[in-house]
Length: 491
Figure: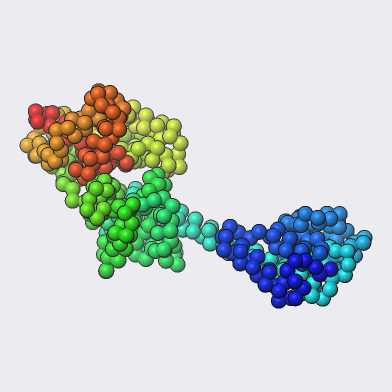
């Protein structure tokens, strides 16, 4: 019963088996049990099958294996699979059949070898060696599956922590990670580092810095589910040696396709603002020396307006949201800071569902939230009503209009600082793009130029202003207000 093309010597035969295992291991595609069974068949001249369990289900077999031998073997297979026997030999018609149970955990798979003659002792030993190899391959496959499942769960937990922080709720992040709280949540503050790199490399970078808990030491790396080139890195601001940020800078130095935007320091509850700053910085980083840029933005518009009139205006605009379900309000807040498709992907909703939430909020506000200027006004009002929550409302005084609110010298100075770096051509393109409701094709038709030229101008504008306009769109509100203020003041 021993034959084949790799010699009869046991060591030669085992060398061939090891070569097959080594080949499979080097491919990294999981075990190919059929090839091992075919190898055994060539060595023994018998037909071979791997039975998955006591029910007789065939997991893999050689092409000539006779399935009719299995029904008579059913009682024996059940005992082998259940661990009552380790090995057995029997006759089924004219065939000599040898069966071996594999592994230690029931139900065990069973290796079945059927030949026309009694196997020689060296063939019996070879069958046992193959059984051991198959068991090890199964263990390796199970370990690989467990590793992949662990990595998937770790990514999900990290993403959930990021979502809670973006929602301004560090306590929720702690509650979600009870028993394995990431050190980041004990930090005094954080900076968001937004790394732009080829999508396939994000997972490799994240794994290279991952610790046994599934986090990244005092930091956190999360693959952005929306922008596939972005790796969102939350770096603890009180990290002793700044190693996390320096490691990212080294990656950028060594890889010309990489770029890095770095936010200012923020408390954990202001992670969304830090992310927005990092997105702005990344826009500048793409054309900056070294492809690394830190956010050095100016005071936001809500910080230069007269507080009491500003909060009165804001509350008059967004007060209608009190009648809207909280879910719709939360979706609307997100949709004012990123594209609708991004909100849908982030929350696991359909685009139609996101649109329905926005319509509900827009109806309550009396605003068209598909319009860039309306979105910018609501975004400003939400920022004001949140940051000035301690202020009351002046009784008997009608709230100012937006034009009145923006008609101050401080607002004019703010707008000038936003737009001053732009040359005339890029400012003209920016104005046309806003007038076209951020539609590059419509802006191109209005200007009589090519759509790609419009986008090229906008990319140059992003780098000049240090604002993200085309990726997350977080800078659109600033340019809408700056252009509006310029019009109010005749600039």
